[in-house]
Amino acid sequence: MDAPTTTSADNGTSGGNGGSGWFTPRKEPAPTPADRERETEGASRLAALRPVGRSTETGPAEGSPQRQGRRTGEEAGALTRISALEDAVHTAAGQEAPEAVQEAVEPFLAPVMREPRTESPAEAPVGRSPVPSQPGPVPIRPSAPAGRPAAVAEQSPDAVLIRRTMAEVGSVADKVTSYFYALLFVRHPDLRSLFPAAMDTQRDRLLKALLTAAEHIDNTAVLVDYLQNLGRGHRKYGTRPEHYPAVGECLIGSLSRFASAIWDAETEAAWVRAYTTISQVMIDAAASDELRAPAWWYAEVVAHDLRTPDVAVVTVRPDQPYPFLAGQYTSLETPWWPRIWRHYSFASAPRSDGLLSFHVKAVPAGWVSNALVHRARPGDIIRLGPPAGSMTVDHSSDNGLLCLGGGTGIAPIKALVEDVAEHGERRPVEVFYGARTDHDLYDIDTMLRLQQSHPWLAVRPVVDHQAHLHLPDAVREYGPWNEYDAYLSGPPGMIRSGMDALRDAGIPSDRIRHDSVEELVGAGD
Image (cartoon, rainbow, N blue to C red; front, side, top):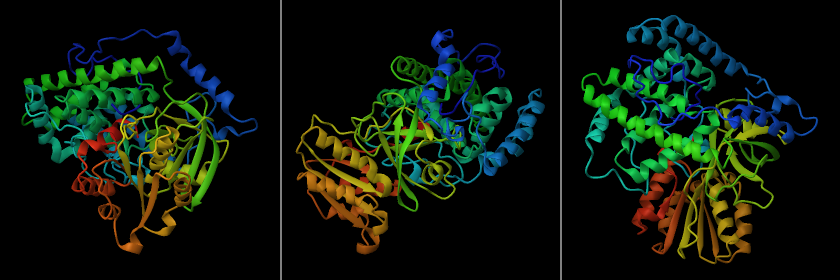
């Protein structure tokens, strides 16, 4: 479940299940003193972090005790539509027929949930294949994560029924998603306040994350890793065990409506079992993570370096220690767009001073990217989610590293190079830095300085408009690469073509690293 949620009204007994509590979690701990003090603790952390004399308008995200967020005209327009939606919700909530609910809610839900996407692939975590950026139906059946085993050959009876359902609703995925949110907001209107004001990106993410998990229901290794990542990431929204039943009910309700031709008691039971398993893994992962890390970190912007008119290197200081590995990424929330999170890779290995750097490219209508590039200044306060991602260096291996970074995808590649250097290794590292123009090689000086300092490092810039050669094609001209582990970071098209080029060069898939679509969906972008 990749959405902010609040306490559900009836703990899983609404929606016509007769009070049986289908999705009641195995464990529902009573509120602890830590739970009751979380808001006060967050306020104390922020107060200690904010620089003296800094205006509160650049403080923490909306909803914290210190700041009542200011909204731009664009956000106010979205909120006007949401207010109309909420009026329709309260009117329709007393009607039992699903058609009445859909009819009342969809006119208001549609403009919010079908607005054009506001972030391009460049704003997704570099090195990861983002959710498709064009509007339209969500691809309900996701592929298996790259570099990992595909679905097992023998499918369980539940998996067969689940995949049959997804095939049935694939052509109407946008309607499935819209109706899912209509049910969620009608049955649990208290949940709406913690979702983003504009649902253009969120509309696909929550349902797609659930269906991705269901797709891998028979592949335990993939499923557990994916779900644990989801559960940890959802802590920053305030998700609690009692929130999962509401989502499960509405998932079943939407699927049963649009897969009515094949839906029966056996199919419903399979989905109930699958969702119960999925939610429990996420609940357990969140509970374990709560013992060792906060749900989110405040971070102060300490440097803002505008490299080009649309690319900035943003450096922040977290309010608490922030452990991560080179090659990973995190999610960021700005004070200007509360509850909207976007992913960015760390642009350096962990530093002794605890500072974190990100390369951000502003994209047209990109809310978070434009805020970070054009509005953020030293002293501003943002929030960070937990680190995620598996594009990290295996220091037990002697293999060389072949790194392909396109555009701002050079950020995690730079972090990997620093990581190898800090471990004192002299394994060969080949970096291909791709860009469309010379202007886009905004970090080439840094990479060349690293090359001068480390004889085992080779940096090869590849500019498309000069050589009329794409980055993966350039890699084919060098080699051999059979003794190398490969790392890919950049736009999704480059990732796909890069995978093909590297496999053609003899590098097996299990030695080609980048974080998959599923991991991006789960990380809370």
